[in-house]
Length: 384
Ligand code: COA
Image (tube, rainbow, N blue to C red):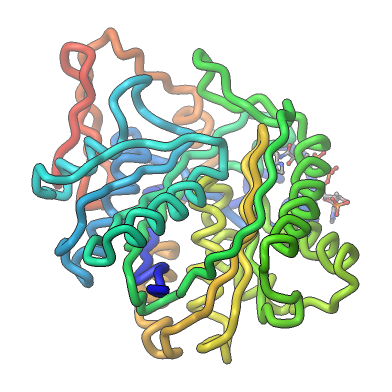
């Protein structure tokens, strides 16, 4: 059987950053609650001329600069923060990246899970025709109400992956474990810019799904737990990965690699939640920071509220130098974000952009692509 998986991966985030020490002070909370209790230091926040399209296009542009576009006939964009009820984010990105017309472009949605659904669909396409490569983008802006418990777990980010036969980075194993259950733990009504969440329920639903997906993986020929060197998890806040791993250790009776919880959360601690991109930014962080991973098997734990979960495994193919070649660039991108004071963050959070008004957005982003504004109710994007 042809080996298929992630050939290359890239990250992007938003222009601004909010320091959780500042937010804690403004909200009268001990900063240790956010930094230790939730495991978050900062969150990215978009400028008015940024959204999932600009972040997703930026991540994909950086990726395709290395890999080229040869063989790319499918572009899937996984997001919970789509910008239109009908037109997909993928079509905007297709234009921004100047891809040929002969590409199928579409969007997928299921809270934080759909990036994994896209990865599996991409593997199916490549299995059918190993000459093809599939561009998978996951990007989201996590927004909760101000002054709510979810506020410190906001964030923004995008991950682009090229899925191909004989991948250079991670070969995904054929077996996976899945689990779906209708749960009202987190959702976002069509007329709301912020998520509605039952935080406590979302944690117990996540943990139950991890257990169910692991059991399903076992029943479908997955590897033994001792063959998995490190796990990465969907991380709405990085402490959640610790809770999930502790639960998995309890269910399996295995001693798991807790060091990988640190190496797999370096970017997430600073970007905040990026919903669909969160698991894949965790994977990128692990690949960039964990030693002795080449030739080893990793586990990927995907959870999207509502709820759908999937557990995948894969073998890391790339050597350490290849895995780390863009680590400094990612850290530089995070260091280079422009810090927002809490009042400035609150002003941006409150801002709405009704589609009925023609608008030109201010030029703020340092990314190669920007959301230029609205004309005749249509969104316009441009290369900077
Ligand atoms: N120092 C260190 N830790 C502290 C602390 C302090 N001063 N004060 C509180 N903590 C710890 C708590 O003990 C708790 O840790 P634990 O979960 O390991 O017990 C943690 O900080 C969070 O405190 P808690 O009181 O539970 O926070 P909260 O009720 O205000 O909000 C969430 C927590 C997760 C419910 C909230 O952030 C949320 O709704 N997030 C969005 C939904 C989400 O991300 N769900 C995850 C599954 S998808």
